[in-house]
Amino acid sequence: MTHRISRRTRVFCAGLGAGVLVPLTVAVTPATAATPQATCTSAQPALATKLQKDITTALANRGGTVAVGLHDRSTGTTCTLRPTQAYDSASVVKVAVLATLLWDAKKTNRFLTQRESDLATAMITKSDNAATTKLWNQLGTTKVKGFLAAAGMTRTKPGANGYWGLTQITVQDEQKLLALLTARNTVLSDNSRAYVLKLMGKVVSSQRWGTPAGAPSSVAVHVKNGWLSRSTHGWRVHSVGTFKGAGHDYTISVLTHGNSTMNYGVTTIQAVAKAIHKDLVPTRAKRYTPTTDPQEAFPAVPTS
Image (tube, rainbow, N blue to C red; front, side, top):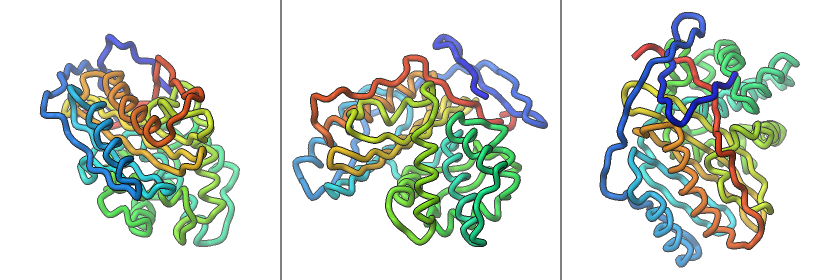
């Protein structure tokens, strides 16, 4: 279920008992600080220099704490900013939940049941929280931790007491997960990878904001976003995506917190994304413009 949020309204939804959400007012002002500078390397040094400059420019005068990860296989390009900074995951963790389900099923060579497939589809394409809770409870944290270990996502810590939205994530680990989804590996089967990407490619339009901003029409887009407001660190707003086409094969993760509003965080992420897409794929082709009314689902979290 999604919840529409006015640009003038800042709320916090706390989970009480069996998924009850209670809105509470939160007021946070983004902290001002020196503009952070990403570190970029590439087989094309000029591209690395340009990306580093343009990502830094995109973050100039932006409040909050932003972490960025980029990897483009085609040019051997990598950019990082605060790669090990921990953030509450919000709905971004839903990709890892689905990956865990598929990894676990692979161990016994079974297909997903119709129930699991329906829940997975709702969880990714509509960010359905109830579906996520059912899959999270079915798997249990032991299996989630097992997948994270197999994936080398050593800095990701599952949320306690069923609060999957408070899983601790980092850009470094999100990039590892996206790498597993976009290249052959021994953790996820080719069918599993294709299934996750298929669902990430069918996310409803109101939730296709963030990292797809500015992607050229010649590039296939797969995305998952999340946002959550709490009494500390204000709004967490995150977006992870994979992009393939026009001679490129790249992944982007942008995690943020300390945003004054949800839309403030979205704007920050999309400024970074637009710079990356423009630098990697210079073109006059039509570029993707996300909705002006971005939405996501509030994960249930404990009262602060």
